[in-house]
Length: 391
Ligand code: NZQ
Ligand code: ZN
Image 1 (cartoon, rainbow, N blue to C red):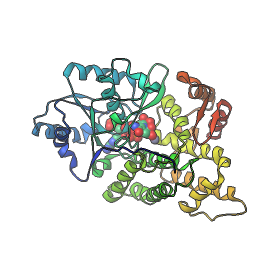
Image 2: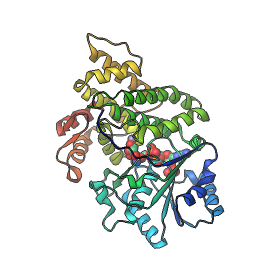
Image 3: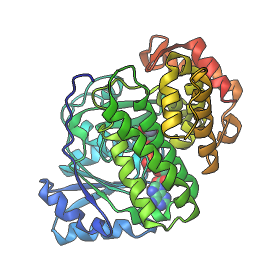
Image 4: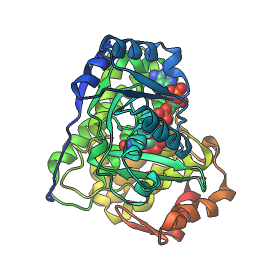
């Protein structure tokens, strides 16, 4: 196991009707003027936004509102939010929604207290200072409610890039699984896929002797294998949604990633798909992961064989471990298809003729040097082959 520092100061408030305590938590963490940030309207339709406003009113905390965050959130609204916060002297950003709304909120929070262009953070500058952020989560997926990360798409060039820093870890996150019951089945499944991706991206490591995090990841993957089909069959199942929601947080606040190198090639390759086609990030991952894993497999066959046996119940073929490894990837792919995820470019809405463009933005866009690295290092030729495997 490698040396690590783990800092995860977020206060998690979990369970039914907890959104009614939002005002109380904003006050506890020092907010005196709030920006309520939200998406395309699901929180308006469900009545959640009104409940959150009422809870701020009860604590006499003033607020301004900015809706309109799109899935795969854009830089334009971030600039607007930064200006609004400065003008209104906001000191707390409250995200009400999914990963996109939370990521846009984090970007605004970092941008308000920064003199330069907030996009600097998405080109490698670490976020050291930000306004306080709180979240009320409405979809179990991205894990942004507990992570130090934010992913934004820059409209000029459609670059989808990430930024990080402990300063943007939410001060509190309110997790009420019942709020996710209004999700369309496709979004629920995309969320499950993203959570499993966050687990796999950590499982694929070059570090040795990482038994505790290996076992935590396997437990969470098994939970998703159990709860995923239950929630797709019965969307109102509170207990299945509760287990998925907490798994989504634990999968990505790095509890499972400490002391080990991580992969993230599937995410890096997928981000270009959701940037270009505006598909759900989880759906893009469902198509991307089997191809990337198959391409990476020979680098460490035993790691893929281990997850195949421990999570997917495959029989270990000691003479031919690559057979076991492949069976595990196939079982994962079939699971994703069974919960309603796309299996190829066509079902995702992607086009084969765009592959050169995808590879160019992926490997050369925004200052990259022609390669991307994770479990292994990939050049433009490798990435072309991987995208072709998805067709
Ligand atoms: O915008 P509204 O109207 O709210 O609708 C949303 C949106 O259309 C809808 N939705 C959310 N909760 C709902 C609901 N509809 C009905 N009932 C509810 N309770 O679902 C759609 C998707 O929402 P979005 O916020 O985009 O989903 P998700 O949480 O999957 O976030 C995806 C974004 O997170 C990034 C992704 O790249 C993508 O941009 N990621 C962020 C990470 C991080 N910050 O740590 C890590 C992840 O790997 C990921 O990359
Ligand atoms: Zn993800």
